[in-house]
Amino acid sequence: MLNRVRYGYDDWSEHITRIDLERAFESLSAEERLLVELHLIHGKSARAIARLQKRPIREVETLLQQALEKLRNALR
Image 1 (cartoon, rainbow, N blue to C red):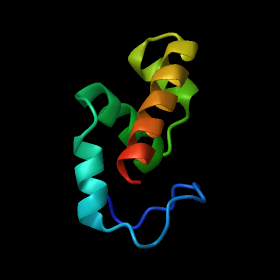
Image 2: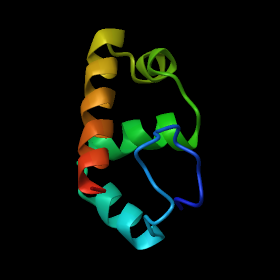
Image 3: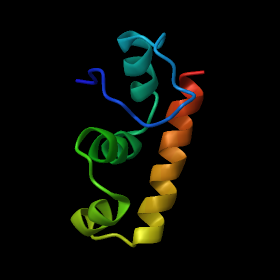
Image 4: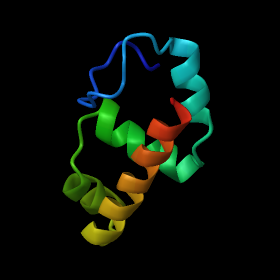
C-alpha cells in the first residue's frame, strides 16, 4: 500500500522501512489514516479533502497537520 512515495519531508530518511511506515500508519486513528492517505497517496489538498468530506477547511487543515505530525513522530 505505502510504496516508495516521496513525502517532501527532509527529516524522513531512506532508512525507514516499509514495516516501520506501516506500523506508524496503523498507529493513526481511522480518521487520521483517511486524511493522510487522501493527502499523501492520492495527492488531495486540504481544500479538496474538505470539499469531499463537506467539512470546514480549517478543521481539515488542523486535523491533517496533527495526523502528519503524529506520523512523523512515530517514525522517529
